[in-house]
Amino acid sequence: MTLRSATCLVVALGILVVPSLALPIRAVLVCSPTTWADLLIFFGTNYFAHAATIPSVPGVPWYDTVAWTVIGLLLPFAGLGKSAGLVFRHFSSESGDLEKASARAALLVVCRSDQWEPSTQPEEIYVKLPDNFHQASDASSLPTAQIQVLSPDATTIVDHRSFRIHGGVKLPPGYKVAIPDSDTLMQYFPFRSAINKSIVLSRSQSYVKMAISVAQLVYSVITIYRTKGNQLERFGYAAFGLSVFPYAFMSLANFICIGVVGEYTHLYMLRTAVMREAKLRGGIFPGAIGSIKGEDRNGEDESLADGEKGGDPVKSDDGDDEKMLKARKSWAEFSRATISMEMTGPSVGDYSLLEKVLVIKVGGTTRKFRYLPPPKDSESGAPFTEYTFRVSQNSNQNAIPPGCYVSTNNTGLESLMACLALCIVPLALIMPYIVIYKLSGFHKGGSTASERFWMMAWVSSGQVVFLFFAIIGVVFPSFAISTLGDPALVGFFSLLLLPFAIPPIGGFVMVGKMLMEFGSCSLSKSPS
Image 1: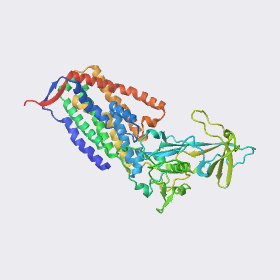
Image 2: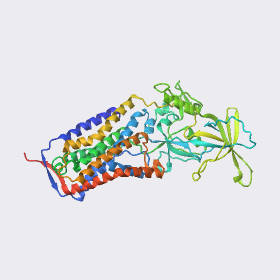
Image 3: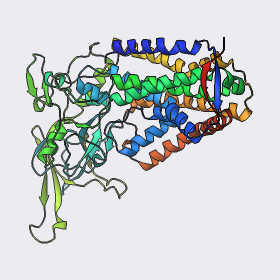
Image 4: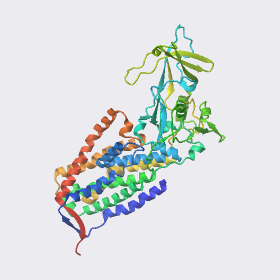
């Protein structure tokens, strides 16, 4: 579904839905005592059905889906924020399926872990050399050295055993799986090569969720339509029928997101230089996608190994802008080196006496160091060493290879999406109150102070978290319990959202109370 078709869809639904709010009602309400079945039907169709349409995070365990469903049930504006953020990322990315999957956080890469060590076989690794590397040591014994894996904050390390991954993953020691940051990934994976542009990935438009969204939207409109009359006279602007408007708004946003962006039932492993390195050490990655071949300026393919030596980067649309120059400078800090590990000590007996010797060759200079391994997870603090060599967590290069690029974030479509986002924010903040005012005039009717408090607090608490989840959708689309990793972070976000979950619970109680008091009603024609 394109942006044009999505816009037409929104306009068509608006033409059908909005006028219904202004329809004159020549009808009377016929009410009967509310039963538990009536309560279940009302809550199920107007609230629970919405929660079932929240776009899911690709490949996550079942408990993440449950957590997002609960968030959507209690805070419908959180669903709107998430959907808006995902749609923005979708249209801000390039047109290829791999770029779209990256924007949806549906790609995984192999990365070096903190426990990564060089192989006993010589390997070509790009490292940041210490300033004193070329200075000869006067000591009679070998100087000490360690290797530090640079971990960018944007890369999300995950436990791949908990996720649904296309194919499979078997990691050798020293490697982990991560959800990459899109802006960094495009600098070391050749998205723009012809073969990667032609790749087609499977994604679902989830017609079941789309149908539920439409059904829930229509039923919500009917519920709002029925609010006019005796219910407004009895409860005023606290009328329970008005509480479904945010859920109708969310269902519309979810419908557009699922139809435009789609859903990925599984995550895809992306071939990179570090995955190739891991395969040489015994790693197995059946089902991996993508090609690690770039494309030079003449349109000829060349291996990434050649590109790693310093291929020409693809120019950005604005030429050598500040972001491009910064990226080039960052990669140029790495030097091409041949690295291996040697074992020294007794050939028989106590192998614990063996020492590891790090051998690093840069150009015509070869140096050896007594290697000190990184501390284990249970240990604290890194050992003091005379030399520290730094390697990239995700890549193996000292320049932006052919087929890769630096995002300038200034495309015309992205500007359009930014303008649309500026329109959605005020709509989400003021539309509920416009609808309430249009229907009730903010007259309190016969409602109690507690009913008015809880119903208004329900609306406003959801709006407070709207911007938070919109930003999360743009910056951290894989936001879930399993991707946060650290239990402390999970606890922090749970405590952060807990105060905003109290008003919805109070609102549900008030809706049930008002339904039992008012009865189950249907419209019938009034006598002329």
